[in-house]
Each structure stands twice: as C-alpha cells, then as structure tokens.
Image (cartoon, rainbow, N blue to C red; front, side):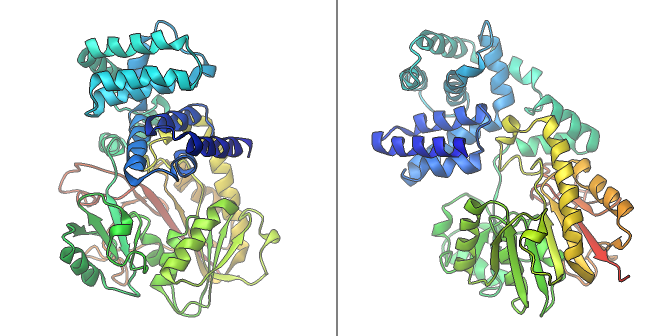
Length: 471
C-alpha cells in the first residue's frame, strides 16, 4: 500500500511540474527495477494527465525496455566496470532507456544521450552524469559489436530460469515461443454478438477503412492489422466491441452456458470474461463477479456499464468464500486463477523483470487452494472451468492432477473434437495442444503448416473443464 501511495504522490508531482514523457518512463522503470508495482498498476498512475501521443511514447519506452531487458542488461554489464548498487536503480533505468533509444528507436543519438545525461539531475545524483555519458557514448562507438555479443549471451532474450523452464516444458515449441514473446502483440477484438454478428461488425470496420482478419478459433474474434486507439473503433462507446485476446475469448464457450444458470466468475478483474459470459448467454439467472482487489473492480464496473451487462460485483477473497458467499450453489464457476502470466509476456513484458523462480511455488499453492475452496460452491452436475494465462505445467496439469487425486466428486469433462476438428457440438475449431488434463494454447510464431496452431496468433492459455459428480 505504501508503494502505491508513493507512486500516486509522484504522479501528482509530475502533473504539477509538467515532467517530460522520458522522465515519466524513467520513474516507472525505476519502480519496476525495485520490484515496486507492475506496468499495469504504474502506467495509469503516471500517464493519466498526458496527451495520447505522450502516453504512446511513455508506453513505447517502458514496454520496449522491458521486452528487451535481458539483452539490454547484458549490454550494460559489458559497459560497466562494476555493477550498480541496488539503491541506484534510477541510474540503471536512465542507462537502459538510453540504450533502448539508441538501438531500437529513430531517436537522434545526440538527443538520446543528452536527454539521458540531463535526467541525472532529476534523480539528484550529479556524480552519475559522467558515468551515464561515458556508457552511452561507448555503446554508440561500438554499438553493433556490443549488441551482437549481448545477443549471444542472451540468445532467447529471456531470464535464464524461464528459458530453462520453457525448453523443458515445450522442447518442440520453445524457439517459436521465445520469438513470439519478443514481439508486440496483435490487437484482438471480441464482437458483442448481442449487438452485431462478427460479419456485420466486420463490415463496419471495412466501411471505416480498418483492415482486419477473422480469428480462426473464436467465433466472435477479429484481428486488426494495425494498432489504433480503441475509442476510434465503430460503436466502441456503445459496447459493440471489446479488446480481448483470442485465447481468452474461449472461456465463455467452454463454460457451456444455458438460460437460467447461476454463474460465478472468480478473480474476475478487469471483467472481460464476465462481460463475455453475459454476451454469450443473456438469459442467465445471475452472474457474480468476484475479485480480491477493490481498485481493480472499478474497471469491471466500467466494462459492465459500457456493455450493458448485469452482474453482481463483489469485493472478496475467492480462497475464503465464507466471507461473501450466500450459500446458493453455482451451475458454472470460472476460475481464471492468478498465475505467472508466462503466456502473455508479449502483452506484459515486465514479467521478464518481475517474475522470479520462487514466485512459481507460491502461485501453485494459491491456485490449488482457490480450486479447493471454490469446489464446494459448485452444484452437482455443474462445471468448473480452470484457466490460467501460464504455459508452465506446474501451474496447469500438475494442479489438476493433484486436485483430482484429492477430490472424490471431481472428474474431467473432456473437450472433445470430431473428425472435422470441431469441438463436440461444433462450438469451436480445434485449438491448443492436448494435455493429460485439459488443453494448452501457446504463443507461437512460424510454426510448420502441418501443425494445427500454425495460423493462430493468440496468447498462451490453459483450460481444463471439471465436472462435479453427483454423490
């Protein structure tokens, strides 16, 4: 809480001083290097008063530095005689931002270096001026050689521990995963089919000269060929369309919703899947949207209002239902569990800075606890859909294996595909890779044409459907 208050105070100071986008990027990156917040929490605090163009520049700097952090950090280690101290994370952030601009942006060299040197005055460490200037000018003189050496040491541009995990889990797909993670994500839309069919909304995009392609596995999904402000999309304000990755769009269909059902979306923020549930089956008896963090529920309310979806929004701990549950069982439960987010690194590249190996064990303990505590809330014959945006088996198949071994009334409700590679009932085409329990979608690029995932450009996601057996 203290870190959040400090960030908010700094953001307010920035508004008063009209500090430049480069300085705001410096402040955000410094917080990330200190493990104080995430990009998702810091960007809104620091950029709310900026123009659209300024916000875009801050995002470019922050996302770019995080996306290429392992390689940029290798460059920095070549240029420094000794490592910077932890208390000088701000100086490290200044240099990383300078390196990123010199290597990846069209910023004039003199501008990137001068702005970086001038930024030292903001952090009040005049001793570092010569250091920043020397490091960046050394890189400028021998840029190609230094960067090539760094890429040799950090071939995948991933933290060493994560590189090892991905290679062990997905040896046949690892290189494609690394490549996908190092690129910006596509802008994927979900059409609100209570207002438009996908084809009808596609025509609106065509009329507006916005190029797109149809998502191959989500019947409500569209991929835009170029990024653009979502508020410029046709009828966005009226709830006609939302931004959601194609993999995330599968949840509502996999729940097999029917009129009159009671549905719980646990860990619901920011509300994308909650809204899709309401769009998919408008005749539900009730939707309960639950999340632990009250600050994140503001976004849930905003999305529900824009899309005209009715749901009861509750601030509560899914791992402690007695605090908030009224005792009425649910026909469907969606548990989109907190996870390592290793399937969405291209959308959240700060994971390369923030995630550490020890976090995985803590997350798996939480995931198992959530699954165990929510299971009694499910009606006999009901379905719980366990989902994560992780590609690590210990957060996915291993959790389900452990849960099934300890829960006598739980069984796998398999996701079955017919001879034409359509799911049972024809709800969706073949997706992901079959696992001992559930299916795993991977973020992939340049897969062989023979592979069923070759034309899919979604995030990494795991789904497993569990059914409660009547005792």
